[in-house]
Length: 445
Image (tube, rainbow, N blue to C red; front, side, top):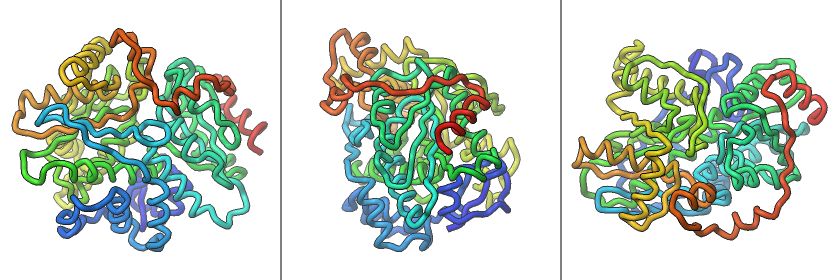
């Protein structure tokens, strides 16, 4: 398997280098040279396949022999060992629950797969590998759980001070061992900028083996495509066209859906559902992309003002390419025809949480609630569709807000309850790179 940079198709690397580098030297993002369509036989068998079997078929097609089949089976079986059930609200709307992994968030799919893949490629290396990762909420907990006590790998998690929920913070600051948390005085975008700057620092890279566990890393993105196939297989074979409503922040989740679509999954439409950080819905509306500083919201994991994976989205629509679609206008037209964008306020989000509970006796978290609102809006104009909302995190991860919104205490899973008595350990840093680099030099060399 070979991959290229979204900024330079001639900058080619193999899978191992893409996984370990995380980010190309030109600050682009890695994309596969070829996205093959899965054979008709795969889709005929899909209803009978387990999720690990789906994952193997996807990876076997993409990796093109980069990893022996037996090793690939082991990687996937170890990583994807929890379900993603589809729960119906009504005949036209269902919820794909992606929170049944160790950290109770959809990021477990990518983080656990990446941990297994990196561990496989890291065998025989003498120098320890350092994972740098920025989180707006769920990524940190999932990466911490996925890499905890992985031999030869240490993890440094950067998160914005005061902008993640208390339980999210406990998930990424209480494990210790090979997991270190840095509390940054700033936003998620500031955390992400520090990580990116470290990857582009050639002097640092000459001294330290570093990689990323954000969705900028292609190995995080690929396993997120698995559950689109998993959702589709749980639907009745015959019926109206299928649309996915995707709560979106850094847009890795939606990009993974586009990858599944490119591989042949018959998705009628993607719905990009955001909070006040609506740069992509605004782009879909007007055709101009204007990143801006993120603003804090109730759905904190989506508080991203300059989503990294937008570059991959642009690339995928430029590569609809065999058709010569390589102009900005052509890319925009292709994207807005396949992706519908909606944005909602915290007030609307809270009302949606209450409405879903009252109408369907289902407790949906603030991120999923935005997906629900976007699906409702889309289906008003497109009623003959079947909609799947990606429920990205267990509502108990936002217990304080959920209790307030619903007017009663929600149930907290035992593994989250156990966190409440653990002691937070994190180093507070300013958002400047000099301070971050100074911390690295004192603690990682």
